[in-house]
Image 1 (tube, rainbow, N blue to C red):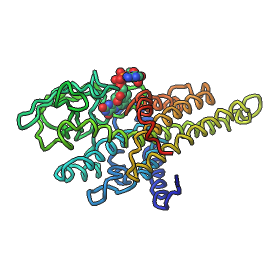
Image 2 (image 1 turned 90 degrees about the vertical axis):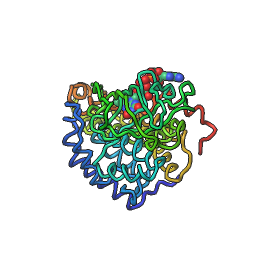
Image 3 (image 1 turned 120 degrees about the horizontal axis):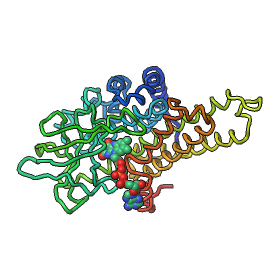
Image 4 (image 1 turned 180 degrees about the vertical axis):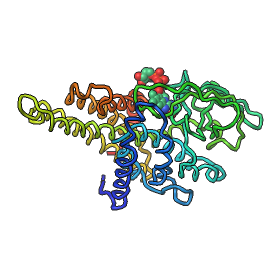
Length: 380
Ligand SMILES: Cc1cc2nc3c(=O)[nH]c(=O)nc-3n(C[C@H](O)[C@H](O)[C@H](O)COP(=O)(O)OP(=O)(O)OC[C@H]3O[C@@H](n4cnc5c(N)ncnc54)[C@H](O)[C@@H]3O)c2cc1C
């Protein structure tokens, strides 16, 4: 597979690297420390084409391909994993899903706002009893011309500042994935409460909240067809997983940067620790595993650009990248030793941030289940 990047892809990546270094990096530690959602950074990101990245320009988006998008997400995650995953949620799980499945009226109403930063999107699939088993939706609906949606959604990233959410609910109880509908729900209406901001270990500042819903939405707020929302959730998550792979690789890359910088400057036994084979091998393992996962991530993004199914490839990319990032942060911690174990060190933050990528948008076990189920579809 050819990964010869175009001049345009490289120049976009470089512009995002500058934005990440100049605007996001100086705030990354404070976002983690306070857990406050960085709404101003999300809005500033719009000016750099980081919102509505793959949405066509005639709909107000940046009209870029998936490969450009994931290059940008990795660059952002290298300085802030939180900002990167927030961008992934509003881009992949909301704007792309609207562009894929909504009516023209919803396109007109939301895509420009999501691409300009006027609106931020959230994706509400998980429930207290529906995590990995996402088809076990208990949020119920009653149809009477309009839909009454009643239930609780948990761990909704971006919810703190989002104006709109894709909400999944059971329209045919008992039918699991065959009876779930996706609704586009503005978050400023009556009957909706945002509760209990999660005090999470990592990716702090992601604005994760629970949503308590007892709302009425019109049939014109259905995304795609009634009862066909579950495949839409899987479609959105497939793109999201490629982008989460990029996010994980940004974390891993930052861990590599930290390990190399420390190894060159820290002296023990009269020499920089970088001269010791034990340290060199840890760094060699980090770089090898990250690069292998990056190839899978670029392959999955390229397949998305070509309109190929890529279900197994996106799960492989997320699985490999999130586990490689975890090991990279772990090894970087070993290279820095006490300097990394200190609260407030960059490696300590990376160590906590990396862990979440093995959980959200499907755990590593969920990815292995998908890979095993779709083995026959693998494109080699
Ligand atoms: C930081 C963060 C942000 C999130 N953001 C969002 C969001 O924006 N929107 C949203 O809808 N959700 C979100 N989530 C929820 C996330 O998608 C779920 O946490 C995830 O799907 C796992 O569900 P669970 O936590 O209920 O774990 P469970 O499903 O209870 O799983 C517990 C363990 O059992 C394993 N397991 C479960 N079933 C099987 C099986 N059949 N075979 C083998 N192992 C199995 C799991 O892999 C895991 O190890 C977020 C979570 C976090 C931590």
